[in-house]
Image (cartoon, rainbow, N blue to C red; front, side):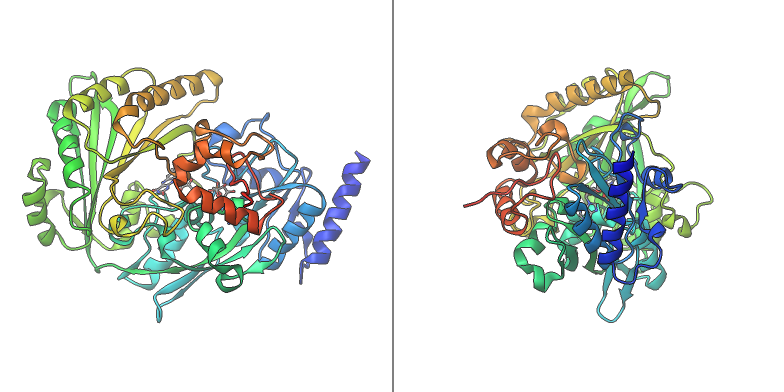
Length: 510
Ligand code: FDA
């Protein structure tokens, strides 16, 4: 239509006017008629629930390659009354980085991927559009003894991950990814480009775990690299119910959060088959130890002998090789494959999360397996806390689930075929397990982890506007008492609530 073309021309001239040194607008602006529009839109849309033809599509896709172009993206989108959805790695569980119910622009940070490592200060500047795999690879290729504590899946984007917390096998030793951020470059709702000093400590606090999408666009992060030994040790032990998984899961709850912080044992439960071919629960205990195998064996023998780990299970590796091991490396994969931005296991999924502060009894565990064995199967990930997570106060960052939490649970159910029936069945499975767990997990509020975003906890609605009181329903699950501080900061930095979505922080004016 003519008006669409006129709008496009004015949008384009706005971008050209506000982007310094922009020589080729085809690298920045993509309309529905551009050849790259669809490939870019699909490229990092990881949850295929949001890839159907009925999913609302962006008016334009912008792929800025410097902070000046991010500034121009904000100026021009606001001028044209278009909302912004910003995307780094596209793993948002509810697809909030790729779609919106209101007219919107997708700012995809795929061209902002620079990583600069400084071995003098053991720090790095990483742009938000880089993936964790790209970051890990870069660190691993510069040093055998430096690492970064963040998530497990290599295709996760730095931008979304750091701004929602970010945890993985180094979390008991070094805390969350967000705990290891030293500085950041943010473009705020007024389109100003700010660093830590110019944004002030409030906004800098909010973007490290509070979900930066409520506050602006983070262009880059300065992170602290952490020391690891040149050789570390990993193992994985699978155990079925028939082989004693219940006893091990019970014991794990008492042991894993109390172990020395150099040792991280994740437990993972899925519905599988036993040797007789009938359905059972398979538990997988998979671990990283920041030391060599000889040091690890006596620790396991004294604290968790029931696991039956012997020297044959232990593999010594460089830290960067363990990244690939935990990301599920396939035969023949090279370290370079960590840089592959395409997630080969893309699919449809639903998920929820919880925190546990009291060990669950064996009786309840047996009842849990019964619930899990009914219907469409999914998985449970149990990530141990304790260690460094105990010593960071609840208000140090927006992520409040620290001292007193034994572990975090993720319920995750995935399927590969489109169809409403599939989604219904997988939701029913998740909901039945989640409902069963209600008395066994944290309450008032029941905890949840922002990076496992879950709109069934509550939503601001499609237009993104909600009162502070209404948003508390989901906000306090993610942030507990920090939700109020986030809402006050929001009122200060974005009083008109430009950066909003179904679960953005509403402004709270005093
Ligand atoms: P995406 O681009 O979708 O962004 C997520 C949210 O952040 C959106 O609201 C988006 O608008 C916003 N955002 C993104 N970039 C931004 C920017 N530059 N500025 C402002 N806002 C921005 N988590 C974990 O802690 N540990 C783990 O091990 C894993 N493992 C894991 C495996 C798999 C297979 C999946 C799908 C997910 C995980 N996660 C995880 C969860 C992951 O940390 C979470 O989904 C992150 O938000 C993903 O960040 P992306 O940049 O990829 O997502």
